[in-house]
Image (cartoon, rainbow, N blue to C red; front, side, top):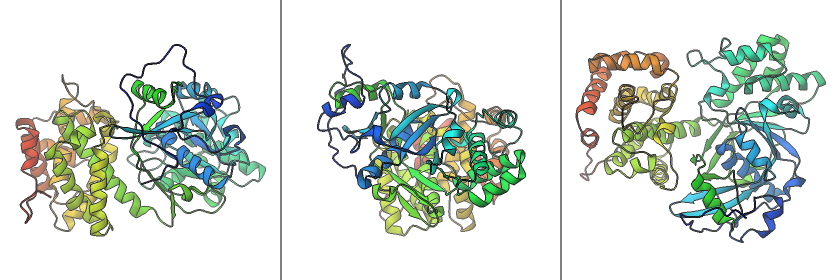
Amino acid sequence: MHAFPNSLTNPVPAAAISSPNSRRLGVGTLTGLPHTVTRPAFTPRNLGTGIVHLGCGAFHRAHQALVTQHTIAATGDRRWGIAAVAMSRPDIVHSLRAQDNLYTTLLRDGGEIRAEVVGTITAAVHAPTDRIGVMRRIADPRVRIVTLTVTTGGYCVSPDTGRLDAGSDPVRHDLRCAAKPCTAIGMLVGALAAVRRRGGNPPVVISCDNLSANGRQLRGAVIDFAALRDDRLADWIARNVQFPCSVVDRIVAPATAIDEAAARNSLGGIDDRAPVSAEPFLTWTIEDFEGERPRWDLAGARFVADVTDHELAKLRLLNGTHMLLAYLGALAGHATVAEASADPELAALARQFMLHEQGPTLTLPEPELRRTVDDLLHRFRNPAIRHDMTRVGRNGSGKMMPRVTDAMRENLAAGRATPGAVLLIAAWIRWFDLCGTRGATMEVIDSRVEELAALAAIPDPYRRARAFLQRTEIFGRLPQLDRLQQEVGAALVELSQDDVADVIRRRLLEHPTGKAA
């Protein structure tokens, strides 16, 4: 659990209504905030800009920006302010600029809230209209770190090859218009080309996105793009630029009017149009690298030689189980992960899935695995974090392999049963058939939705299962395909005919205690 100094808890009334005379959060209102609100331990306007972050979304502001604030408070090193770049929509930029780039992080645990005003953003930047230019900002010699949260699609990587999708429209645009790129990859390459021309030292580029081997994927995409412009630039980047992998973990909910009301209440009537809402739990594991960096390790982050084990644990335990709860929970009529986690059958299946399917494929000792599972189930059940099923379940075709079927393959090779993974896959397939039906609690958002919906229309459930499982770009090469076809097909039949709770109960393992795992 990450520690947040000087934070107090205070409940938020449901009816915190804005007053026409309420003031807006800003530097001038900091000193008048209630004592229960943690505020920057430094003067925000005195920060230098040493970090450029691409992707100024809620996650960055509730994670890296907050960790950086605690780091500056611990060290007094004011070089590490952040130029936060919104890649497309300008809404958050307008909101931040109107309040001196300050905003409130609301840490929600059940009915309690801890409020902290964050002041590490030195510039809120809208990439498409930035007069200075994102590339010039990155190439500034004072900038030593570039971080990214641009989602998987922002890497312009083909899901089939794992390399840069050179034929995609955004990549083709950036190759034609090198001075005004629209992608993070194009911006990075343009900035690094400028650093190379002046003979400077390039910044370290850290991916904070939730994808496997994120630093290596980012490095590959950047070098591939650079090679399309200039082989010598690509070679220079390969030799001189560090792209450490990192693993981030915090559940952050999209901001709502309820969050604005909660922030207003916590701030004593001061308006904040850019609050973020998150759970208290936070981790950040970063591969060690050479060069200057903030002392993030003093604020809860860890620098390690290799993040692979940490990444696998996070992808398989948290993210894989999130998928199970989303697809099956939505079939059961639950709208959020918290609702699904409070369902006794779903909670028992989630625990079993983590302990007996995902867990054995990891290097965690048994006591640590059980503690981690208990912590995750507690986090999932947090009713204050509204993690809706559509958001968790989107783009399942790109998430299935690293989060579910890589572990499934290891289990099958070791002779271990995989009832949870089978049911997860069947529930995901079922949603392509239910897409758009009245009363559905999940909207299917997937880059392959049209072609997969055609497969879901195959009348015979066993043939349908095989048609999906043969898609190696989604599931990888699965062993025992005939057996899996039968198991997934049978699950499809049950999910279409029976109550979801009954389908789950049939797959819960019994242990000597007589209770499900």
